[in-house]
Amino acid sequence: MSKAAKNILTLNYDEAMDFFMKSEQYHGFELPEYYTFDEVLKYVREKCGTIPHEECLQEDVSPDSLSDVNLDILLNKDGRYAVRPIILANPFLYYFLVREVCCESNWQVIKDLFEKFNAPHITSCAIPVIPNEKEPFHKATTINNWWNSMEQRSIELSLEYRYMFVTDITNCYGSVNPQTFDWAFTLKDTTIATGIQSPIAQNIQKFLRALQQGRNIGIPQGSAIFDFVGEIILGYSDLLLHESLQAKAKEYEGQGKTFPDYEIIRYRDDYRIFCSNREALEDISYILQQVLERLNFRMNSQKTKISDSIVTDAVKSDKLAYIYNTPIFNKKGVDFDSYEKHLLFILMFARQYSDSGSIKTMLSDIDKRLEEWIHPQDEKKETDSILWGDVDLNDDGRLIKTDRKKAQEPYYIPGGSVRALSAVCTQIALENVGCSHYALRIISRMIDSLKDMDEKRSIIDLVYQKLCNQPNSSYNQLWLQNMTYTQDKKQGTSPYTLRLCQLVAGKAVEPLWNNDWLKAELTTNIPYESIVDGEILNNTLLILT
Image (cartoon, rainbow, N blue to C red; front, top):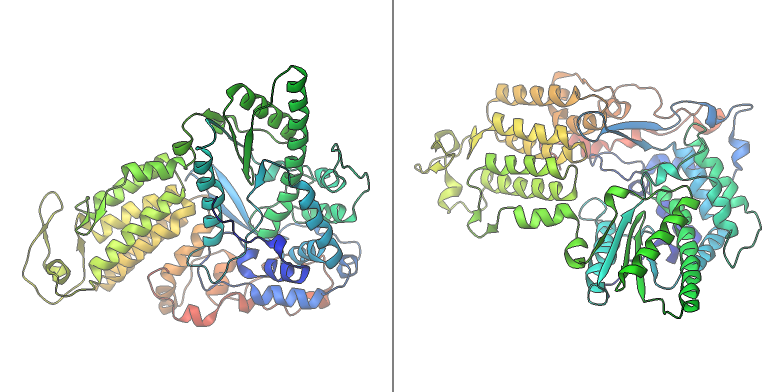
């Protein structure tokens, strides 16, 4: 079995607090590297310390009743009507929730609770994991943990079992019934139920409600602490499932049958159930459905199936498609003879597997190709010393060899102009907002290679107009500004309305979060200016990193 990553349940309460109060755990989505929230989180932690939550409040004011308590950022998922809000949680409410979970007595209670959730033949792989060092890319440790504990383990289990049942929960976090926290902490409807109400459960509900403008359903998304408290509910469901399966095994015994071996892996709301008896596997799936219904969850029927091809079905469909459709890379390069064909391939692939991890992989691959083409590492190579201003292409986009000369701007890249290739990248970004910054990095690299400043500005302006006019997607602004910052700085203007972007532009803005519910002495000196690392920003180039 593959080695599991170290998770936060191995930490003591102080270490757990430190883990959650890091900027990279505070926001779970990618941001330009000059954003950091460490100083703000440090300020809140030092200012509030151990002061009871109620003593921090303004008299007769509750965050439940106020708008803009969090900083909401809209992400358009499909370029049209599918919108997903992602939040930068109010740092005070975030701290109160983390403090509730990580105070010494509560942390031990929670660790003991997860020990009780452990059940034979059911493995949860989603407790937040601890990076060993600075990660090479966003959530590298988490992704590697998923690969080891979910994908690799599933393939290993194909040696032991014939069938695999796959499903997930529709809108899992949005469907959480807060009362379920009471049930989880009291272990309701289990053989080890205590019936003792927990103040921890009540306080978690209180802070979650405040983080959602008083809504008494669901939990937010976007921070490690939300994933962790979500695991309290899902871990409780694991225990309910285990005891229900034990009851089913006794039914089998009463019928003179033996309940077959099985293995269940869960990663957050994704389930994989392994068994060699198809009839028994269906029984297990029905029991899982019943357990989830008790907790206000619904199986996603479109993602539910029984497979007898475990090896391939254990791998994400976009990853498989990437493997058997992606052009072959070798020492000579890539099968696609032009960058336009390569980008068009990615665009069409993305229309089938939108916003998938494989798109990020493919965009990173072509970015590396472009970097090597524009800035050759080996000047001795014939193809690396071609003068871009004198490049000739045939009708198929293939390079016609020319004499070696001093390099100029690559106005034309094999397969088309920088303007044309930027248009394809922009379309990819429009239709895959979660991957937009990967497409923008390619655009920025191509534009950076141009010597014609008017052409640079023209393409940047056109890309900006196309992406900024996309409805319900403020997330794009964060990355567009990363690309246009140098130009904006020279012109002394900034077209971005998102308050985070205005901080980058050095504008005086209203507070990022509505803190009118807090006593004034707690909020007067919040270091908003620290959110943008000036040193990194001043070194920001056109090319996104």
